[in-house]
Amino acid sequence: MLDVTDRKLFTPVKGAEKDIVFYVLNRRVAPAQTGFYFVNDSMSADGRYLWFYCAFPPGLTRSLGVVDFQTGEVHNYPETQFVHASPYIDPTTGCAYWTVGNGLWRRGPKPQDTAELLNRIPDEYIGQRAVSSLATHLTPTPDGKEFFVDAAFGLQYLFGTLPVDGSDFVPWWRFDRHYNHAQVCPTDPDLVLFAEENHPDPITGLKFAIVDRLWLIRRGEKPRPLMPQPTRVTHEWWDPDGQHVWCVSGKATWRINTADSAVETIDFPRHCWHSHSSANGRLIVGDSTERFYRGCASAVHFLNRDTGNYLLIANNPERTDYIGANYHIDPHPRFCCQDQFVVFTTTVLGNVDVAVVPVKDLLDRT
Image 1 (spheres, rainbow, N blue to C red):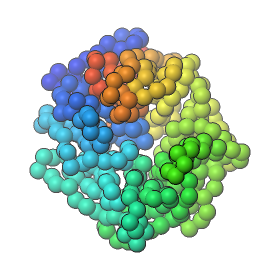
Image 2 (image 1 turned 180 degrees about the horizontal axis):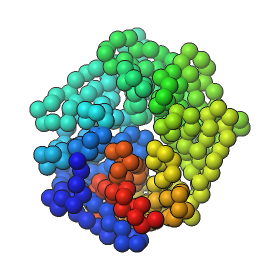
Image 3 (image 1 turned 180 degrees about the vertical axis):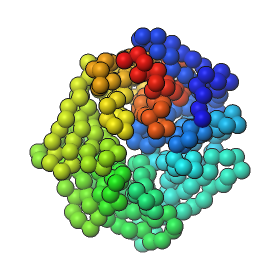
Image 4 (image 1 turned 135 degrees about the horizontal axis):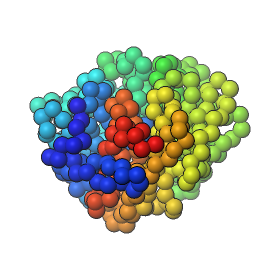
């Protein structure tokens, strides 16, 4: 189990308010080490493994690192180079899944483990086109038998499922504009949430802006918008109950009922950039910024909805250098390991680092 008091692995840092302390991973295997994008948990359920993203400037492709809290070892596995925020960690085994090219890969957390190709989109769908992305975020069906992909190649975006056992790819839908951030419903293998994204036209270079962000698709059916009217929101994720979708809107986090599109609004006292919720929805973590640019200054905060109390955890200084501009170092705070910890990215010690704070410590102060 993760022990944040282990000084061989973590440096304690005094937070922004109420004597909160967060813990920065001090064992470096890469010049820049960041937490996962908030959609996927980066820890195994037993707390033994913590995975993170590794960057080696000026190379723009990141790979995975992992902390083994049982052995005290930290490793980078260069063969895990991935695109977007595709990595997924199996909570039971601690194995990492990721995408590269048109393939779905898996690797265990131990040094002696090797990378294994599980499946790929057949050439008949891709032809001679270059695959720029296979999945924004890998998410499995509830039974773990398939992963959903929102592949981008040529001038099209192909949605479908890749079975882990290597059986045939199952196409769901093809789009001619940019849709991504697809995530399988945690309770229904036939339902997927996805997002309308700003569309960069590869021929003209023009950008076509988001009009209606949130969409659902059911296997065998046409996609449909979640909201009754075109709605611009950002940074969406599923509630574990499979009946609600969360997203960010201005200074608020929304919880939306997928049956009737009813919105529950949770306000923050400052700008809300990304958010994430505990399994029961009563705790919220988020980050904020005064002015967005890659590498901008940011803050990480926590809201206890049961008490109404708010806590500022960390203030991250800006990084205006090459690392800040190129490696998506937004904090992306997320509840991990069955809501025992919050993991986020911080620049407070001058590097780009992975940070952890126990949820119990946050509750004690709110």
